[in-house]
Length: 215
Image (cartoon, rainbow, N blue to C red):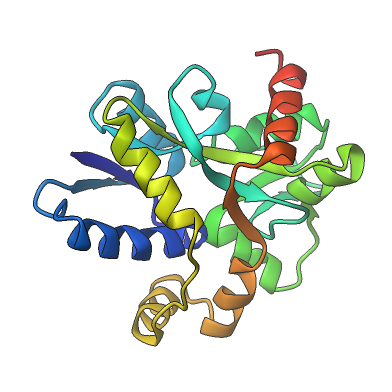
């Protein structure tokens, strides 16, 4: 089993869960990871070099998925437009670049941990998820947990991840902080803006995004 692993902070709780889940379910011997930014993992999944991953929602529509995703109920802090500069897409992104176009926002797209650092520095920005929510009063779904096979396994992952939340161990917060140069306190704060359950309102928001992006 090959899982595409995006090492942004927004998936830190899920990666911790998966480490525990695979160990307890005796899947650890068969679970391997390919790491990369969203655009790279999209490509790995679409060419079947990974069996499952959080796939950018713009690429996930025609693929099997469970009811887990990377979801912003309002603002997200890590998907931004830098205004008053030339238009520029983020090469690591897929969905966020399309979202900027859907919202007719002009400027430089920033996503991921570098965008969060930019936000924390207090620099001028527009939060794309917040802008989406202002216009439509709906969450925005950035990615979906997609799979090619083994539906039962991923439904079990959905069930077990959805029913529990756990505190991130301090040593893992320390590691994430050292890797990203973002404080533990800011990481903990940031994760309160991220949701994972693809509920009715999130599905409604996703359907509207697909319609507006002409998919």
